[in-house]
Each structure stands twice: as C-alpha cells, then as structure tokens.
Image (tube, rainbow, N blue to C red; front, side, top):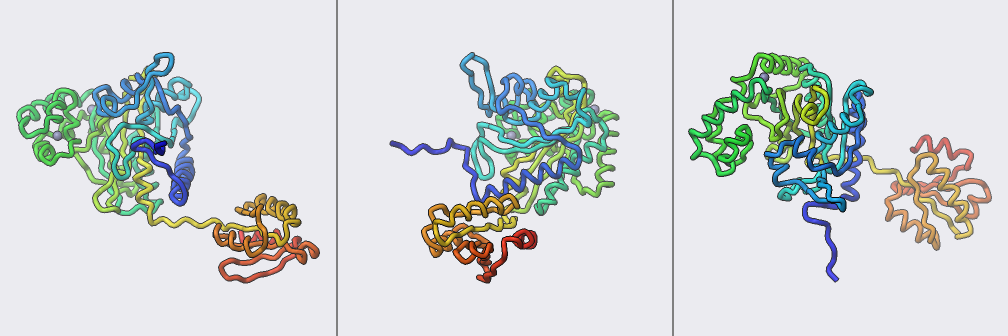
Length: 416
Ligand SMILES: [Zn+2]
Ligand SMILES: [Zn+2]
C-alpha cells in the first residue's frame, strides 16, 4: 500500500521547532494583553459569502485561493483565508460592540489559501493579528503600528523596516482611481496581461505587481498621496507625528497599497532584512468601511495580520532555556511505588519528571536519563528508603549528594 503523506502545502511541526511556536504564542498573549486586547477564537470555516463580501470578489484571494466546499446540506463553506472578516462577523453577531470595552481583539490560528507553496509559505499557514474597533483617532493607528514593530523587536528580529502610506477613503479614492486608470491606459503596453486586466477592476493593485516592467511603468503613475481629501491628509499627518513621539522610525512608501478592498486611510507593512532580501512579516491598516459592509454599525476599525511561519524563520538563532528534567531512578522494582510517589511530589512542585517503569537496573536507568537529557537523577535505593532520604546526581558535573526528604523542598526551591 502507498504511504499516505501530508497534503501539499501543509506540514507537521514538532520538537525542537515546536518550542519556538509555543514561545511565540506565549509572547503574543503576554504582549497584547498589556494593551487590553482580548483573545478571540472564530471558526476555521465560515459561509463563503462572508469572504466574498468581506474581502472583495475581485481579489485574488477570493477568485483563486479559497478552499471552498459544499457541506452535506449544500451550504457553501470556506476555510478562512484570513481572519479579519471573521472577527468582524463575530463582533456584530455577538453584539460585542455593546458589551466589551475597549473593543480590542487579538487572534492566532491557522488560515488556508490555495497558493503556490514556497519557503515560509504554506497552504495551511498560521497568522496572528489584532483588531481595534470604534476608535478613529490617528493616535490609535500609531499605537497599533508601534506595537507591531515593538513586538518584533522584543523577539530580537533584526533589520526591521516599517513602511506607511495612506490609501484614502471613499471621498477621495474614486476620483484618484479615475486619474490612475487614465494614466494606466495610456501606458498599457508597459504592463503585463494581469495588470492590464486590473486597470478597470482594481487599478491600485498594479502597484502590487512584482514584475520589474510593471514596477517601472507604475513609477510614472500619479500618486494617491497627492489626491487625498483634507480629512485623510490631516489624519495621516497626525499618524506620522504620533509615530515620531513614539520613537518609531518609518519610511513613507507612496506606492504601498493593500490587496483587499476594505482598507481606508493608514496602510502599513513591516519587513525584516535579517535573512537577506526584505521579507514581509506583517501588514495592516484601517478598514473603516468593512463593519457596515458586513451588516454592522458604522464603526471605524484598524488592525494587522502577521505571518507566523515567517516570524519563526527569523527566530532561528533564538535559544530557549532547556527544561531541567528530573529523572527518578530506583534500584529495585520493589521501590517503584516510592518512585511514583516521589515523581508526583516533584511534578506538583513544577519539575518536569520522567521515570522508566521498565527500569530493570540502575545502570540501564542512568542510560535512559542521558537519553532524555536529564539535568538531575534522583536515586532511590535500600539505603535511601531506610533513612527517608534521596540521592541526587547532577548529570553535568556528576556530583552526587544525599539529602533527607525533609529537606527536599528547600533543595527544589534552590534548583528549580
Ligand atoms: Zn479621503
Ligand atoms: Zn504586472
């Protein structure tokens, strides 16, 4: 029979890499709770309509990359390709905007896109992100951006670059899009077939094209920054000022746009050059029109989503403290009950403990202790049992001491 393998674009994560994932996940919980964000967990699959309405039916994500299927009752369901639409749906459906203050959420979990797998990019991939609702202050934009950069710096990720832009609003963007369309049509021959199609559907996305000829042509296109309405201009000015107060260096990238239709005003992207070429780690921005679009109240929103696989790649030099494993050994199988009870006491104290139920003799157990990389081995033998004591061997230094069980607590306090 053929061996069954994991589907293309998916992977198994296990030790030692899994420790980095746990470290990253714990860091997210600890960091974002300091800003009063609350974790939210939404379903892995949703009604397909949520994403076609929430992301935009014209986008590559919705047109080409979604895992959509019919369930047995004929409903069209989709594995979530991102989480913002789901969080917005959950906030509306559960009336969270009436009961939760402040309206700040963070999430982490798997997302699914039928994309071309490559290094650091999978069809099932992990994202974490934050969303802030009902706050239009430009200072919030700056705080969200600050937190993204600060969080990555705390992980010791080097060469972090922040780029920001304003993508306008429904007042100023349509007028600019017409100007952009005219300019793009005039230079159509300098664009790839895909970008030519984007001219009428979503010309902003021409700036996203990675082909050098398109980037070269797009350099001559008029910029949205010169066509912002006064509200968008003022908002963006304060965001930049606030970033300066917060000591966050940034680069203005007038061609930074977002592939998703619901973004308004501030857009940003954080990359790292630590692994050579600049690698996108996270991106986000304001999306003041999505909540209304999905049937909720007219409410401002801002957030970002970060690719956790990419972040993990940047953590390759991270050394995490190794657990100090305690191996409990017994000289004779008749002392196994004592060993089991000792292990319980040690675990209750927070020690990671291993004991070998099949331990035939001490020599074999010490071999096992080396295999599990134990820091200490506790030995129970006739002598120790009789004197209500235990011998402790430091596996690195090979020093051995014998202590009374009465003194076990203070030994543990010193060593754990
Ligand atoms: Zn505007
Ligand atoms: Zn192109």
